[in-house]
Amino acid sequence: MKDRGKIWVTRSEPGATQLAERIEAAGLKVWKAPVMRIEPLQPVVCERWTNITGEVGPGQQLPAGAIPDLPKPRLIIVLSVHGAMPYLRGCGIPRYADVQHIAIGRATARVLESLPVAVPAESTSEGILAMPQVANLGRGDELWIVAGEGGRTVLVDHFRRQLKLRIARFTTYRRVSVEVGLQRRDVRQIGMIVVGSAAGLSAVHAQWRLAGGQEFVKLLVPSQRVADKAAQLGFQRVYNTQGASADTVIAAITSMDGTA
Image (cartoon, rainbow, N blue to C red; front, side, top):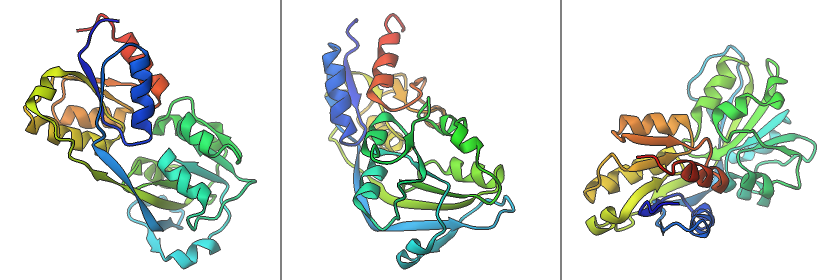
């Protein structure tokens, strides 16, 4: 594998260390410097949509004391490891051992392995929507989503507009930007950047440009939604890895041998 310069791993922990170790094991140079840290929310925030007219928009925010009285869901979607860990530990969200869960990514599924859990073929919103567990939902069914602040709002919009579901969206954490102290000399050594989320992309763009970085650097992103945002920010060489797992990122890097 040819020398690409350092690969800047910007995603939050614990995924940053896991990915950096895999990249180093592949014989590549890596600079691990997460641009986001995870801040748990306590109590969790619950936003609720109950009408089945298909309208989208903000839901009703429920007080924490009302969460135990929510109807039992038919399906629970957990969008990340950061959401799965507080959910499993007990953060005020009821857990049902007889309800099907969908986990985004193998790492999230491992956290939820004591529960019925399935993983989409692609760790994207499109991958979730293609799953048979989602296709089996009907008008008025109860769906829960466990996520971070601002994550994957497209899912709620789709479930409301297309499937007319009742939804509870639990926000268990927020991402907080971290200054990594990127210098011009660092920029000269970096040949590729790996980002893990739309929020992370915004933080990378701000710090990269401030340090004199140019938008023709190779940028690996986890989904088409983030790829579209990267293009809007001016990045010219954007590669959609179709997920944020170490396996998908390493496969993408390997497949780029010989590309300009």
